Structure formats: structure tokens, C-alpha cells
Image (cartoon, rainbow, N blue to C red; front, side, top):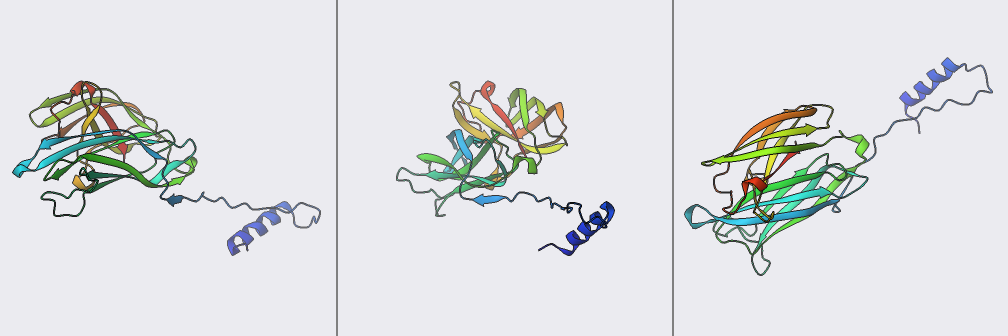
Length: 252
């Protein structure tokens, strides 16, 4: 059934085209609709690389530094929002470990993404404080809300020629940034630490339940440069090769 507004619009258009000529084809007013967003447990996100390290923490606790690379493997749909990656810490039997003294029944960290277009790649990083090191750190893409790429802002932010230095507990990174978004946009800087063989051995700064990463922006469209300083106390693995550090900017 047509709405009253649509009916009025149709009558106005008919009046302009001449209602006296009964032989004219009827004027059809088309309603522009935004394609529906589909949400569910299925996710086009895939964990394409990950790793972690156990580091000494305060009060005889163990600090876990971790990171992972996440890709939207769909060729036609965008993760509009609600794209989630769940990180859990398991013992040898597969039981989820608890925080600190282990009194909590489980430890998990959740990361969400928005406007992750087909073939786009982002990263997650963080830390967890435990009474014992895990036997495994599991990364799972648990769900997403997908939609037509044309209905959300289109673009990608990439980092080039990053130079990383460490002095004390501070890591400084200078980088070149390329943004294909049409408007300035804000983001979070995510670091993935790799060893000399290129394997991920940790990540930072904190995201998810452990806090927020280092903010950057607004990043202007096109090419630009930026510098960030991050407090890395406790989550830089000893075997991290700074020359192998990967930097990502996750759009906020």
C-alpha cells in the first residue's frame, strides 16, 4: 500500500505531465531503499596469522602479549559493523584460564570492526595477566553484520616505510600513511611484533578489555606522515625484531 506522501508525490508528477491525456503511460515513483544489513554467527572474517608470548609480570603473575592478522575474505560483502574476533587462553586440557589467580571461570577478549571492505586486512593486539602461561591462545571470528559495500564509506588506510625505535619503556614509530577515504578519518595504531623468522610473537598497545590502543588522526585523504609514541612496558617480547614490526591503522 502506498504511503500518503508517496501518493501525493505521484499526483504532483501526474499533474506536471498532464493528466488530461488518458493515453499517457502512468508515472511510477520509485522508492530508494537502503539494502538490509544481515547479522548472524557466520563471518567472512578469517584469522590469517597470529602469535603470542608469555612475559614476566608483577606479583609472580604471567603477562601474555598477543597479536593476529584478520582479513575479510568475502569478494562481495562489507563487514559494516559487529565483526567480532574472540581471543581465549587455554590450558593443556582445553579449559579456559582465569585472570590473575585463576578465580575467574574464563578469560576472553573481544574485538570488533566496522566498514571492513572485501579483501581488507586489519590486526588485533593485546595482553592478559594470568597466574600461569597458557598452552594455547585461540583466535576465532565469531560473527559479523554484512552489507553491500556501496552503502558504507569506501576506503582503506595503509602504512608504509615505518621506522620503529625503543627507548626505555617507550616505542616511537614514524610512518607514511595512504588513505583512500574521501573524508578525514580517525584510527587506532596496532603493532604486531615478529621475531627474526617473521613469526608473530606479540602485539600492542592494548585493545579490547585491556584498554585502548594509541589513537591517530584525523588522517587526511591521500598521502601523509605521522608519528606515535606508545608505552610498551611489559608487552614487548625479548625475541621481537623491531625491523620486522608491522603497523596497522584500524578505523574507528
